[in-house]
Image 1 (cartoon, rainbow, N blue to C red):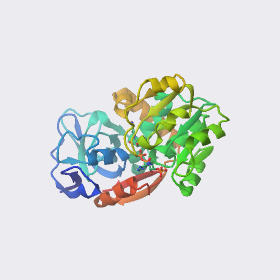
Image 2 (image 1 turned 90 degrees about the vertical axis):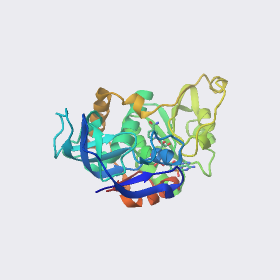
Image 3 (image 1 turned 45 degrees about the vertical axis):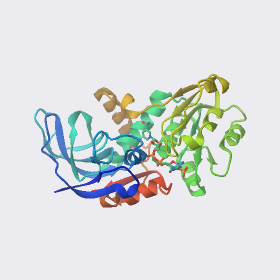
Image 4 (image 1 turned 135 degrees about the horizontal axis):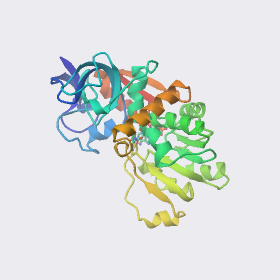
Length: 324
Ligand SMILES: NC(=O)c1ccc[n+]([C@@H]2O[C@H](COP(=O)([O-])OP(=O)(O)OC[C@H]3O[C@@H](n4cnc5c(N)ncnc54)[C@H](OP(=O)(O)O)[C@@H]3O)[C@@H](O)[C@H]2O)c1
């Protein structure tokens, strides 16, 4: 019997229920996988609380994972039992076994582990599109990355630094500051105790940043706008502290003819071609040593409640996985 973590009603971590589920045989175009590792993501908490609406109720939580093909449905010719594969798909990941549409799967290169792949498909692909597509980071750009010691944060700092950027990160504690500095940050700001706008002005000698990557949301708004140079880009890509409130468009004018975007992964890696392009770039970055995948926490799948408490309680750093 397959074990999964389901949500029957939205709420706190206690609504995550570890239970038996029936998984049907893979349908046309689907692949059945036995999962080896599942990525933990802040977006999992948005679905759990109802901030993001799940299309069905109950639903199986989780959005990325890695495992081994055990069977394929009608029409699938490019995957075979035994293949090592990974994916990001909206919901359904917190399970020992599951079906995934074949066009959402990528094969793992030999030296990429299931644990690495399980956190690269959502977090890694997000960092890929944020740094290479939403804003093309180039040598000499000054970038501000909020929550720099988080799952997205540590990968983004490493990659932005490797691309030649000058990286400023914000973090919630001294320990996180050390971690961010060891992962590519040139400067860290303790934004619970320091005014991050003043510190960015000081660090940049009032030249400010070309781009701000803001996954924190409510608590760093509108400060993030004040960290941008004229015509800079505000990338609001998440809501760890709550959503950014509605604001007048004229604020962008007042802060220096700024640009603003609210991107999501599906719109950047929605086609098969884009998925393969992003996955290839990520795997190459890991295999060449440009990116180290910081898996700092592992929880048993049945302990998903604790994993969510730790993530929302700002206890985790880097990436965390659930082990089926
Ligand atoms: N748009 C997209 O395509 C996309 C895709 C993936 C993820 N995301 C977003 O990226 C962000 C990071 O995701 P992640 O999974 O890597 O999480 P994470 O960064 O590992 O965890 C969130 C971090 O946010 C910081 N934070 C600030 N205020 C917080 C608060 N009130 N409550 C909890 N945390 C707070 C904490 O770091 P400090 O203690 O250092 O402040 C915390 O560790 C999230 O907003 C997520 O939604 C967006």
